Image 1: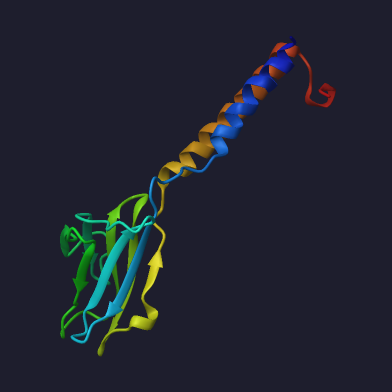
Image 2: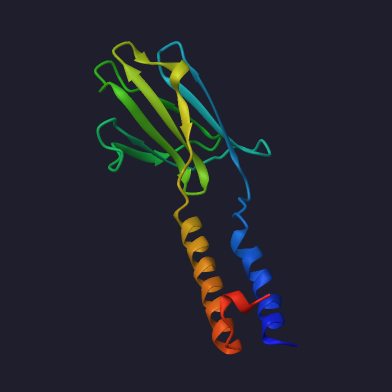
Length: 160
């Protein structure tokens, strides 16, 4: 077996593994309604319908998405209520449920009249390890190509 064949045989599975996206054991579904007392009533369920109970929750004010003003856990039924209060800061509040890759982030707009239920939306959490995986695989492929070129003594135009 030539070095070229060996490298291709070894690198194809590595490239395939490096391009695979991470799979989540469970996705979550977040359902919400605006209650009669102007609170956002939320229930979070796994994709199989089981409650996402006792998950961590953090609430961030519109002026600081880094430091939560509240941290706790949702109840065992996957439910919690968010009521910003009558004197709440207007703007988009962030409600983070669960942890990176296993949870949800709600963006909750609050104006002078309270929560605008029609504009509540989801924000996808950023998975920072994805970019690192792609960079690592790319560097491994470049290194392998350079090694193959050095070992065979060929220029790129000669390969084929």
